[in-house]
Image (cartoon, rainbow, N blue to C red; front, top):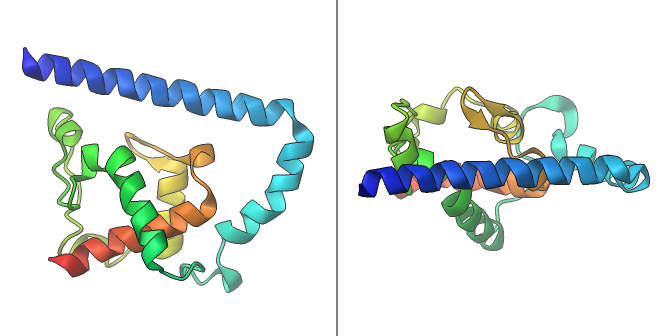
Length: 151
């Protein structure tokens, strides 16, 4: 019974997240002046200079703390609270996710590729898209990489 309630709670959380994302997207479409004004700034943070695939945002304690908080809300349910890839939702969906603690799970992934995955999603993972500012995504990349340094 407890696992059924937990699964239903996760489904409800996913539905609320999807509805919120759709409202944010439709809200930005209703006011094209806001979207046009926000676009250049978003693009400047979105792609690193020179296309090298390196994170353009400097890692700071504040940025890591903010990313850790977001990770706890949005990522840990699948990727595990410490990045082991064994979160409750991943287990219930029979997903095999990389263990980021050793660093092996991220060694062949550039920062830009991680940015794209977090922003756009991959496989069953939905992207953060409009819900996360580009700077927050770059800070999340620093945080995820820091998980391998803690073990």
